[in-house]
Length: 249
Ligand code: 13P
Image (tube, rainbow, N blue to C red; front, top):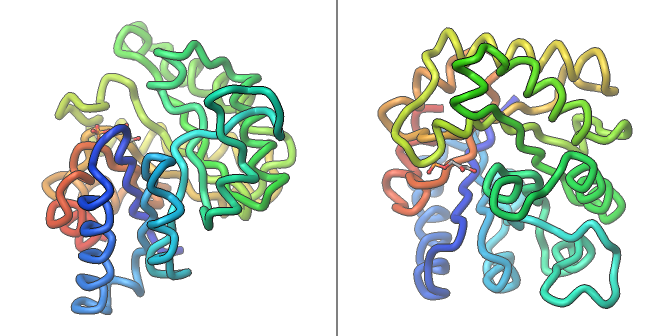
């Protein structure tokens, strides 16, 4: 399975910077074609840029995704963006249940499952995020927390074709800290066992790692069993640093 090297730009970049970034990635991929045997790129951009960026999208090279979608199909939901709209502008993926949405917008597992179902209905892959806080890890509750988030936010109809899991320990996001390869491996193996048991095709579902991944730690993380790619925040804001992560794959 190719590693998925996914950028989560969060609320960053101007339109010009966003365009420059994606054309740069395509050029880099042309210059290092071997990379595409091992990795593919996904850029999860602010929604206002998606339409313009998806013109650069190339299956197997670089595709474009949203950072969130509505649970609703359509209607009077001011400010929301539906999965149908994301598909309409050329997105292949959408992140749902990111810890920043869980924390700052109070999103709960059932809402996240509804967003994933909305993505499925529209032929978009849901990248469903799970991960424990530092307090939960320190209290040795991390597996219990992740199991609950996973079973409650990943819908029954999830398959390897419509779903990607992203394990993002909250304490590693934007902090420069990462789990040791042993701890990351243990959690990814745990997630693999859970999804294999509960979802059809779970053995082939991608499990990304997210949280302070960069070109210094990516080699180790990406060679950990059951780490099928990365969801990258900070290091995705500089095209050379982001491409360097892909080189580690
Ligand atoms: P950082 O890479 O900045 O830690 O962010 C990770 C993240 O939140 C990816 O969704």
